Image (cartoon, rainbow, N blue to C red; front, side, top):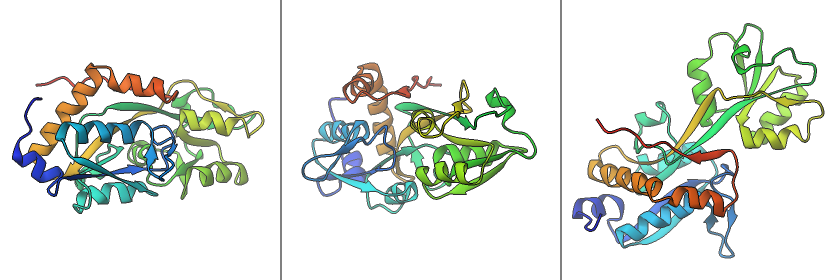
Length: 247
């Protein structure tokens, strides 16, 4: 990728600055802040790598909600937005292939008769879930019998699970490990109900930019940048995404 077309620069950084949105609530991909308050972690570093390829300055926007991240790209506030890819969100933006995958599973309370992920989707089962998170969107589409009980944050869903004595708590596996340490007798089910793919989103009309960003993702995976960042930030519960086969 030796040359960048004027169309790509015009779509992503029309004024010589790449504005990039990241979701602050994803503690696996945004692990902290710098002394100046800028988000740090895997997702911010992926944004920096893209800005370097474009040869432009980077301005990071830390968002408190995932809707805000998606809207930043859909409304043209940011050239790119890093967030979990999902069909519902893809109605507003276009996603690249994933650069990392996160495991999503369930936590169940002590003495629960549920021993397998496949047993959760049954009549009468109530699941605490963080509303409109990537895994919640998947559950909304795929659950046939169980009922989702929504909360407005990961922590709120954990508290809801305990307070209402629900049958299961949905979440990213790393987050469930932390929750299990605070809920005596609880256990995490083996396996996953889905893998949450984290990707780069851009405005739906920016076709040249999407092609450029998709090539970036492929290069970041094949050169080992993604794996290096996972090791550098010592993050568990995610892995570099498999390369998407080209048709």
